[in-house]
Length: 264
Image (tube, rainbow, N blue to C red):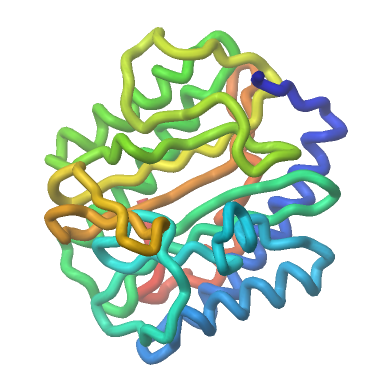
């Protein structure tokens, strides 16, 4: 079942999304060579709880942390650990916040220090594909329209679009209908109606699109071990123009004019 959100419910999701955006920014302040990913997870969890929220991911189907932290060739669902960031890594931070009974969900991929032009272009283009997908999240369009524009944009650069993982509805539950693939055909899939809230989240690989799940049952890695990028917003379907409920504003205030900045 696809749930339509009332304007009052949308406001509650926005409140959750503000805490989420600021939690992302707090984490971004600490991203540098030498920091452990477990330390980053602690920063996020403390910030969320200090602002009356709950980390959406912690305990979800047994997931052990507030953040999914995915490094380099890990696409999504990586565990925080004692791994120390190194110059040239890329790190995807995926986080959710539950506040006032509603979830919000977003992700951002950062370069750690200097990365190759090839890798930085992957990050920039994956981020751009997110916004192209969001432009399709309007009443009367279909879910396939979102996937089509993301896929057609990134594949012209030779990138892979992960098929096994998709975006999703967001609301009282972290994952709701409909599923929102990052590939598809125009005019296909569930019809979009005003009031649907979805997480659009391109997961794009520098090489082949095929992935494998590690023995921990969570971590998803590229089979060719080439880097992957992940950007995500929680979005409200509107008439005429989609409304982005989550925000990268606070991240970009922190990363402006630094090597962490991913501009498009």
